[in-house]
Length: 177
Image 1: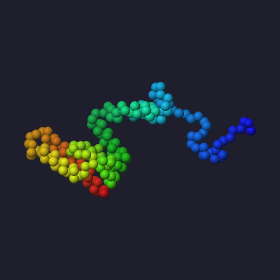
Image 2 (image 1 turned 180 degrees about the vertical axis):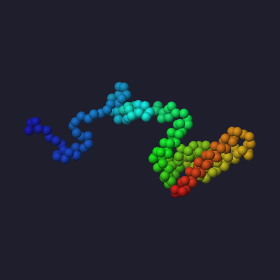
Image 3 (image 1 turned 30 degrees about the vertical axis):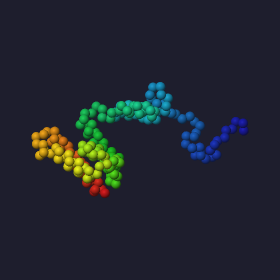
């Protein structure tokens, strides 16, 4: 028995655990020059390309730091792409479903967050807070109070739109609740 080798699996192959074999495994190395870490984070070489770089976690973060998803698009195209992805994205649609979640926990859409910002409110503001802030701000810049003031008219329209976005969101929550 000088040349025999004993196995640790005792006839049960799964007892060895996954990756517990003695064969060499191929590990892809990071594509960054002079990096010897495992390259297990794929990154596209260019937009809409199937070719990928494979970086270690550190270099993937460095690569993604400068990545601009909307590069080369004008403002309208970028807004259209963002809107289409928000409506098509299953996670976004699923997040809108949960009416039991309170504000400030991801249950508000990006439009609602911008509307709260226009009215100068925090993310956890209730609809009563929205009403109060809207009334106060609208009174300051109402066209009857400031006739002929172009800036006041634009501000009034912005407040009106913000209130309308938040009112419709509140109605959706009440209907689901």
